[in-house]
Amino acid sequence: MTQTPPGFDRWIADIEARHLRDMTPTEVARALRALSSTYVERRARLSGRGAFDTAGKRAAYALYYAPRRFQTVTHVLAALAADAGPLIIDDVGCGTGAAGAAWALYAGAGSSLHGIDAHPWAVEETRLTLKSFDLRGEVKRAVIGSARGGQPWADARGAQPRGILFSYTVNELSDDQRAALLPALLAAAARGARVLVMEPLSRRTSPWWNRWADAVTGAGGRADEWRFTLDLADITRRLGRAAGLDAASATGRTLYL
Image (cartoon, rainbow, N blue to C red; front, side, top):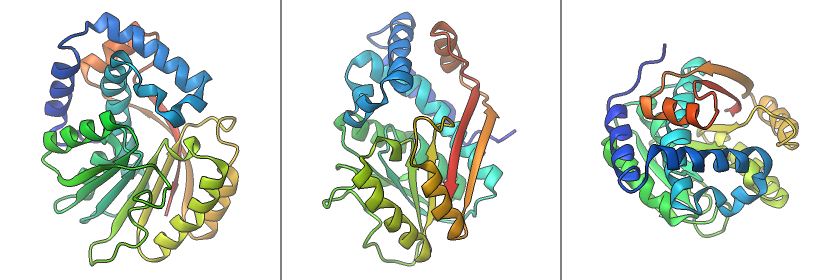
């Protein structure tokens, strides 16, 4: 079993205290059912960050999806036997920063998290995630793929390598944005960056996946499918049960360079 990093319990307790201050678990579970429906049936809304458009959905995302994402990334990196060592993690479309924090903690001492997201709530939530885990880093508001800040790694120079993370984000981009992003990521990897792209297992929701997988494996990378059983915090399990979701079961696909 993958070990839970120090600070995880503190992070969960902080999220729970903030988001359940004015809402009951029953209200959050109701919002989680709506949010789950958005993910499964109306993914186009996510490009406008419809997942964050009510307090209930924000609480459900922070208490259910973020902890699961943290643990899924931790499991994936361990299964990939990804290189440890200090990294600057560029978490693009960071949400609450859960995935980026998981990679920074996996990489070890000296790593930092640089998050970007278009939604102001996500930016502030990621700052709180950094604080909970005592991670160095910064978060800024930017549109993914934009000329101003959307590719923070593109012109970066320095001795410390970068880890570029797209966690359930590439699918939210337009076809034109994806077409421009793929060669940019391959070029970054050729310069020494690590690149990790994560998406749901369903191929129906990601018709672009095979083309990206061919490009990544052709450049010496990996394309994998995963199924994990997660060891979750009590609040995440209870919310999943109340919403009729199998919280402990996690699946996904990754591309890794």
